[in-house]
Image 1 (cartoon, rainbow, N blue to C red):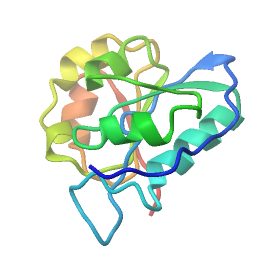
Image 2 (cartoon, one colour):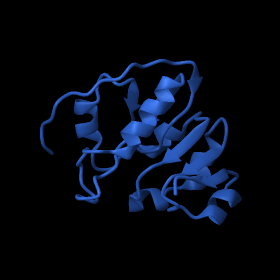
Image 3 (cartoon, one colour):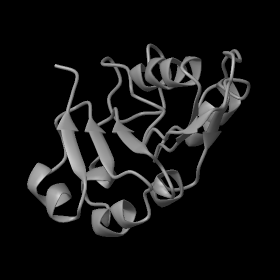
Image 4 (cartoon, one colour):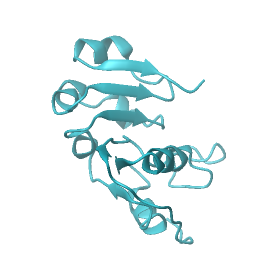
Length: 140
């Protein structure tokens, strides 16, 4: 984990939305804590700009994200379950194997609105649908 400059964005909170992952490894450094050009940060900022509360998790880059994006208005959570609790939507932006193997039935059950937006077409649509989620593959 390297140092880095602190990034900032303007937080706002009107509704309860959640992003499942706030960090996405750069295409040059897959499965690392490299936050360069992280698409999840861009997605989170867009939700915040539209008035959403954003909670996020990442299995590798969480500590670094907390440091570099402390003033962004993102609530960084220790687990995907914490992100999903009472969420209106979960947005998957990274292909971490840990996310494919989550107990989706439990996560979906704790959501307020059971919408899963899969930005990587990485998750098992039929499994999520059986768990009661509304699944949509997005972004390419």
